[in-house]
Image (cartoon, rainbow, N blue to C red; front, side):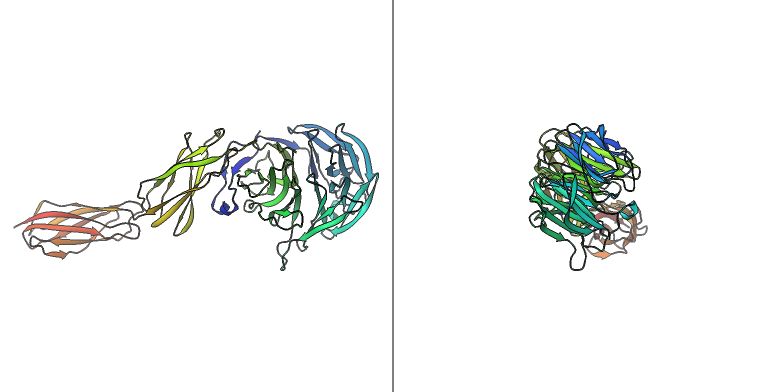
Length: 571
């Protein structure tokens, strides 16, 4: 079942402003399971046993609950029973133990047998839910010591950090206000990342790292993000660590995806391109093989809610985008709702809307192939004019398997008025395509053609062609008698036509008469009707061959033209 509309976008942030994601039908497989939960707590991916664990994180509830268990195909295969509603979860470094928070204890489950093996009591019996992480071989969890769901998200709530020691817990000594989010990862197994969330708009939320290798946590670098004017404060939704431990990514609903250097939390030299306009970052996760990063968002309509792309932001490979907008898909990626299989073969994403929650199992493409424009671009006509169709012909070559449906070439035109998008063109089976445009400005115009890539093909290097757009031609046609008399006069009709844009109204044509002696005089101008027709009446004063000349001087978008008629004037 395919539950999302796939779109392809530019891999270069500098080009996003002048292009629109193009829908592409050949999506990676996306299997979807409806989750029987009313809220979302946490998701953990167990590679060893190929299991995905999900909790509902309900607040204010009581009584028995369970951790939902799914296989890597998105099928529910069981559950882990808890005495109270479950919230946070974390997997031990060896994958053998799953730690699950319930209101009064941190439970331990054997992932192979799915049985409970132990529990550590917490200092408070609360229903606000907890974050759980494993770092330095120890289990850590957050505390918000309040009961009743209406108090859980108060920005002035005390937030505490605890560790597990046997069947008891101990205060780690690091406290704050609001809510705390925790993150650890195999790339830096002794590092615990902690961020402040839910502290209100006025707070300048922090992000900090801790060395958990010793008996006590040792704080490393920390950072607050607001500037001197208080702008740019962190609105933390999720934290991810790269597979090599050198980068930390933050899903910031106020900014987007921040990519940081883990050594000092400074901005990485190259960041990820912006999310879709209006989208708010909600989740981020790196694949264990180091190849991919997934970025989730809350976006409206057909704007992208999920991007899958190379973890290295300098890699220009086109991201894969999903827009969740159906009753069977959810409409947004929930905070902390992304997790990878270690080998990058599957991404697990939890989405939600007003009707429920869904688990998506997405398989990114195993390989991507190169693409390129070949040969030279040609134009038809060779001399384009304002207001007339212009065809730009070329050829695109794709390595690897042929796409299931025709791919498209995008184009932009740059002229004296700026940059304008041009309608995309489908690429035929033999690679040929024709981009069509109607230039509306005189002078030089440069067309840049782009193939933005698809599920299995990388973007091609852009190609350009420059043309000189001329005025549209016009034509004057005359119908005149072969002979006329001086007494009867000369009656000439005609028509002015032009290519491109419509001719302006109120045109007056210049009319001259040259008699047999070579004397030329200008007659009353001829007014052109709306249909282009006009009429000339004259009473010549000399006999013999007389030449009538009619001319149009042109306008801003049309060239000039003229015509002559010779009439023999008799007695």
